[in-house]
Image 1 (tube, rainbow, N blue to C red):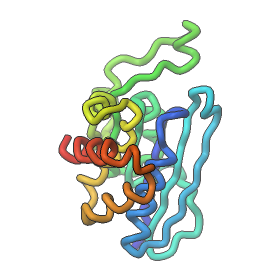
Image 2 (cartoon, rainbow, N blue to C red; image 1 turned 60 degrees about the horizontal axis):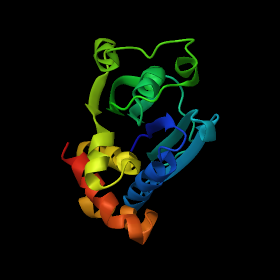
Image 3 (cartoon, one colour; image 1 turned 180 degrees about the vertical axis):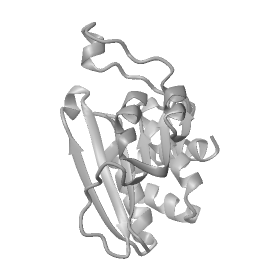
Image 4 (cartoon, rainbow, N blue to C red; image 1 turned 90 degrees about the vertical axis):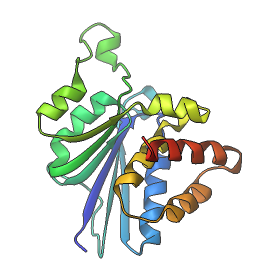
Length: 190
């Protein structure tokens, strides 16, 4: 199998590490060589967080260059727009419609761009946009929007549901497991 690349992007505190662990567990269970690399700026200050996940028969480097990503999973809308150049032609963009103001918007130096989903579609992106925050709140906590988006991703990948459920059991603390399983299902059915 040729190497596939998925970028998981968001801002600090949105749970990209859990999402990349879930995805990595599912891919490893399918027998792939998997490399995961986390690249982030001021993640504890709400800065951009990017995680690269590459998988295939043999993967030599986790780094994803512009135009190489088969999929971009974004926890925040502006981050989806920022990472669009990394998506390969025909790649899939899955994004939450959540908007978190970056520092230039907070300080008044810039405005948050309007109609981003429409602009991304017009730029040629094959985009699936869901209100992951709302679905996570339905599951019981806003913090599960990362798992909602993993459910959306799972609906587009042909891996057995049991693998995703097992990954959730391995990566999520027991006291939060049922809540996250509900969030995953809401995302898968979105």
